[in-house]
Image (cartoon, rainbow, N blue to C red):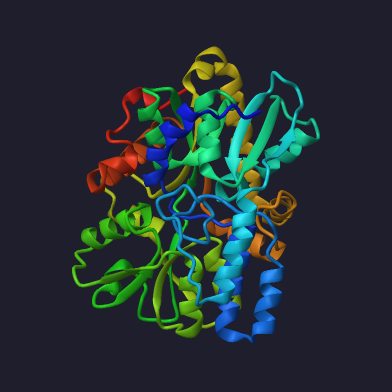
Length: 402
């Protein structure tokens, strides 16, 4: 199903160098965070046990943790001094070589949908399960990858019809292909949270005079945090960047009063392991509080090849309808959805999946609201770094409004 060639790889190399997601989580990511926390609190034998549980599956959209997306700008550098982080990274490296997982229809004419193992796919698992059982109106074949560059190259080459991508990567691919893709929905809002044991921190304004630890330097997390600090007139907050979320999880384990920005499901894992930690605030909510242009902090969007959309508009509209139903179930029936999240290898443990699901901001936002939210977000990124959106903001033809 893959027809990757040198041109496509070259086309995407520059894009992936600046492509980032606000946050994500995976089996490997969650287990890596668990391992890092264990390093600070347990014996080496306990750490070995935690690392052993890490399966050979990596994950998706992060410019932060354990190399879940090796092509992203936030590719981590493993600290050799942290045994757990090193072991987790080794597991992640093995995961990057894992073949894609495909479920659904074997009809060659079915819609080919590609996604990453993380929050953006968590909203689709109910539809994936229905497709596997042959109970959908449309015909779909779902392919889950562990790396965003694989999904991006396959939508560019025509090996996929629909893809779930980081929001800014979608803009980059649009620019690189001169309008070759269109965005049809927002599937995940921001999944970044401020985590600390310091009860005095409840808002962005409270970060004044403090040091905050974060991943994603030169990427979406940095741009989002800088935007929020500026909007809240905070000028004396020191941001210290770490290459991977496991480092921050270990830091919080040793000093719960530290303040950190982490993505889900790292947040859930860290808080389940240390009852001194809590979520101080969501960066998504903080963004909504200061946004005056309808923009939202985003993680992922769904795109379709423009040529496919022009030839199969009814099928795309049906997919949007069935996707929305799947998202509704993900948000209303977290127990059954969490079981499917585990089944498809997105998160290893069902309790973690069930607790993380409501915090992953899974949505299906379409039409004018989608355009307003996404265009405003991309504008913020473009003002911080034009390269983060492919050099220019997308034109109106980027946004599909049924």
